[in-house]
Amino acid sequence: IAGITQAPTSQILAAGRRMTLRCTQDMRHNAMYWYRQDLGLGLRLIHYSNTAGTTGKGEVPDGYSVSRANTDDFPLTLASAVPSQTSVYFCASSEQAYTEAFFGQGTRLTVV
Amino acid sequence: GENVEQHPSTLSVQEGDSAVIKCTYSDSASNYFPWYKQELGKGPQLIIDIRSNVGEKKDQRIAVTLNKTAKHFSLHITETQPEDSAVYFCAASESNNDMRFGAGTRLTVKP
Image (cartoon, rainbow over all chains, first blue to last red):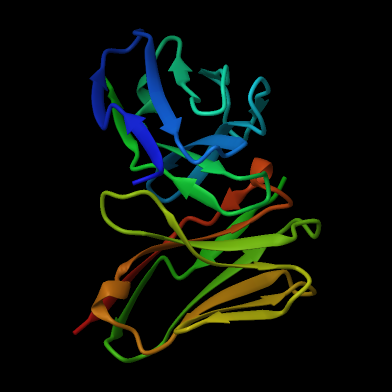
């Protein structure tokens, strides 16, 4: 079934370690996004990419970086994880910005 | 930037009753208002959306209304069923690049 695949599904990470969350979509969508979901705060946009080769900062970008080398992949990297980055991370894509966004199943990350 | 408030945070209704979730937003430039349903352990899924050039949109048992003057919009679910139980999120934006979500409403439909 076409859609968005995130990996890993969950991870426990020691503080200070580097971690890359993977996201792949097979819908040939131009736009991709990373959100974090924390209880009581809804979803907050970390970074986005409107098309391959371009990225932009969302509402909470500090401590995270992204790249968009091709249409399908949009990895999110935590260079040096901190406990406040414990969250559930969702990748999403849409055909264009301003159209329906499709979400992956999420990655539950715990930084200890 | 945009700020979206959502109420109530929890809502419990009897099967067959209606459920209403309300959201307000702060940025008058926002013109796209989607609603997402999130089931346990899954990612959010779009159930309905509305753009600022219409005041109401309906899809079977689900409807959304928008009042741009008052900067609020609401989700209405009629004839609720147990499978409607989930967390619902509203959002507001000019584009997906600046979409701001409400904190969510946990809806429980009791059989």
